[in-house]
Image (cartoon, rainbow, N blue to C red; front, side):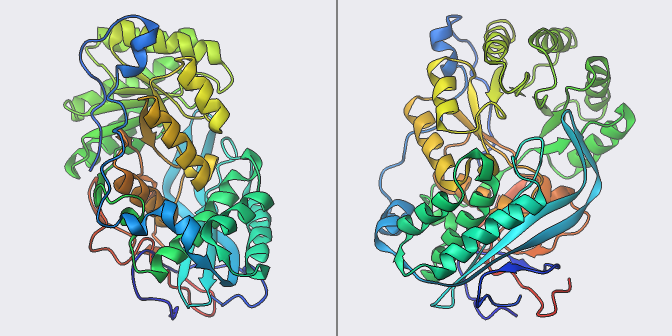
Amino acid sequence: MDPSISSASSPLIRLSGNPAASPGASPRPGLVAAARQPGSSSSSSTRLRAVSPSPSPSPPSPVESFGFGALKETFSVDVAAAEARPLDVPLAAPFTIASSRLEAVSNVAVRVELRSGAVGWGEAPVLPSVTAEDQPAALAAAGRACDALAGAPAAPLGAMLQEVAGVLPGHAFASARAGVEMALIDAVANSIRIPLWRLFGGASDTVTTDITIPIVAPNEAAQLAAKYRGQGFQTLKLKVGKNLNSDIEVLKAIRLVHPDCSFILDANEGYTADQAIEVLDRLNEMGVTPVLFEQPVHRDDWEGLRDVSIVAMEKHKVAVAADESCRNLLDAQKIIHGNLAHVINIKLAKLGVLGALEIIDAARKANVALMIGGMVETRIAMGFAGHLAAGLGCFSFIDLDTPLLLSEDPVYGGYEAFGPLYKFTNARGHGGFLHLDNNGSK
């Protein structure tokens, strides 16, 4: 077992595959939202306040001296070894969205070991329709960053993270960069025995997630909805965008078995603006009002995004979220200043950890609501995002469910899951201490 198993922040994992390792590498984780505020002005200048804005930063806490910002400047990081390796896990069932179909997770796991013996883990999620990398590209990119970290002299955490950003710049390497950033930050958290949710602010030690129903036939959607109702899930995120009429039939089927659920619609860029507005009109005729409509149009259709946002809020009081349209800080600023959407969806895999924190800060200052989500990920990346969301306490929508969709879970710890509730207090680290057999077997 990994000798670093001791504490604060990481899950346990068994991984297979050969590492792309740096020299010397060892063998080898509640705030669901309410979505809408009743009543709002119809002017576009006030639309961004139609959803509860992300809360302002809380007053300093007793653990402020251990906060992430302070650690970036004061904590000296000396990396002994770092490696990246494939993380392949089958899904319980195919996961189909408007832009792609997956039958297995094909991500990249990253392990960083400090000279103190502390170990951290990260994950580079791969979804080629959203991330710029596929698994081989992410594995190679993360391996380059691992080599750079292992060969670098001791330096403050912030400088090490900048080193990673220099090796893996921009959106083209965002997922690999996120995985390496997670592992480095997790290792530091473990070394000082501070769980990540406290490191990021300590606002809460829980989050409550929705759960996703992919694009399936109406009868299968109804079966999933009934199952999730029995497990305590109140908010269902429904993938739509391939066929408007089929989407409506699926919604009807779900309402029959889970009539009191809240809906999030996620079109993954699948509709035109006119189709997105038609969906809302037809749902209104059924007496259904989604709490959120995520990425209704193509990522570069800024005019369409704005038009859907205006109609959705003024006519139906439905908030619209930008996901694929927000790939960096410039996109976020365009969305904020142009009143193009009511909510920005933060995903570490498309922004990196530091990039995500920049956009979170910009959105909070502008009183724009936030959502946190992910690609199809294991507990490593989802656990890190969950700790971040709990610690910051500023997310109006939580969408961190994909570990629940895997046919097996190779990651142990990070958080305890009680249906939709994830609790971090008694979990064994963040992501804490992944376990890897020396022979690489699961």
